[in-house]
Amino acid sequence: MIQVQRENQVDDLRNVGGDVSVRAKRLPIVGPGLQSLLSIFLAPLGRIGARHHRSLCCAGRMKNGLIIILPGIEGCSSINDSIARGLFAAGLPHSIQIIDWCRFRPWNPLHLVMHRHNRDRARVIADLIISYQSNFPGQPVHLIGHSAGAGMALFVLENLREDQAVTSVTLMAAAVSRKFAVTPLLSRTKAGIWNFYSPLDLPTVGLGTIIFGTMDRRHAVSAGALGFQMVDNDSSSVVSEQEAAPDLYQICYDRGMAKLWNFGGHFGFTNAVFVQNRIAPICRLQ
Image 1 (cartoon, rainbow, N blue to C red):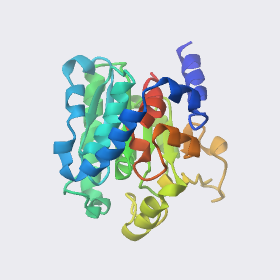
Image 2: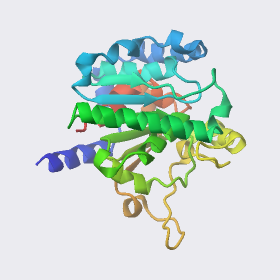
Image 3: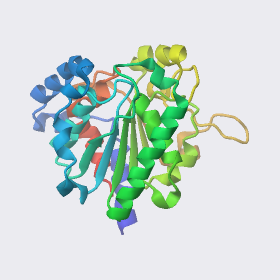
């Protein structure tokens, strides 16, 4: 029964990029959306401009589940704090933590090339998840990664066994190559991997990753711009998403998302209003 319910929830969420007008009219979106948009300019302040999430990782919330937000190369900032705001506005009871894996600040592209450091940090985060699952067995664990943080989320999965699977992984504007081996990691999730991407983000996770490289060290357009390109290892030919990875849900930006303050740029998916409407439902999966 639980499995059937989860499958029904996932089927509903697969249409996450569709018409948003009905729900948008029912929610106060102008103030929070504008606040979240303007908060991008506070990102250079780092942790100073990211205060909201600090109250969301208290002991009382830990028993309800865990959501880990992994930021991009800017580190903990108002950008990922907006993600936490959206999750909180959606009424999620989980402990919500921003884990800053970055070594340098601010906005240092060297984070993309520090492969050993990134892998080491991924192991530390994986150990944190394993410890949480030991202390709170059966509670959901969700990973949300933005930009380079999406690559970190996938690195974390690589350090988990199938019996340590997280509930879901959500990738926003992922700075990883389109041919990243996602398929083997799907079994380390219960509700799949959700990739939100936008062709309008090509200047950052297209040209930017061609110049500086992706988190998996390829100088190419990223999955955050054009989605993952699933490849059949036997024939090396591109195959359909359904055939190769039924639990990889690729959500391309569409203009209807602008009603939720997501205008398709690099930070569009992090807007608190978009998160409240589109990301939080994924984090309700058990």
